[in-house]
Amino acid sequence: MSIPKVLLAKRPQQPDNPIDRETLAGHLANVLSVSRSLDDSIGNQVIGSLGLERSRVADLRQVIQMSALLHDLGKANSQFQRIMLPGGLRPQLYGMSGLAPGSI
Image 1 (cartoon, rainbow, N blue to C red):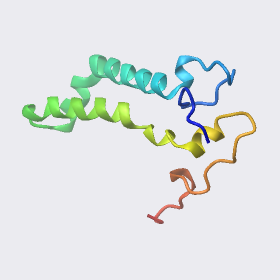
Image 2 (image 1 turned 90 degrees about the vertical axis):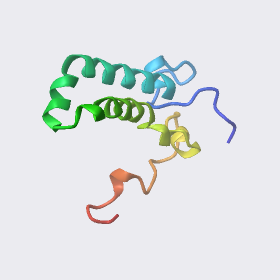
Image 3 (image 1 turned 120 degrees about the horizontal axis):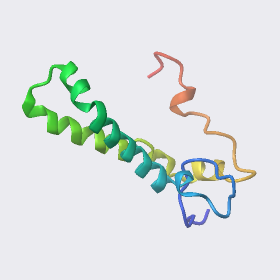
């Protein structure tokens, strides 16, 4: 398979011209933006309810932002990218959603 010019996170409505939120980079940027908005609006309440030491709050905020950026990097593989295209392959046989509880 040739390297695609853009990695996809969602199946594009127009395969030759995916919109930003359908691309992996756009999707990850949107998720990061939402995580920052949530942090701005309710972050202090949520973090306060966790009972963390104040010295750990900045670390937690960094971990949350890093998680937002990395959560879908597994989609940057040739099989997933083929699934996103018209006439693409079936979904992966062994994905996390296909595992039975207690099987890992």
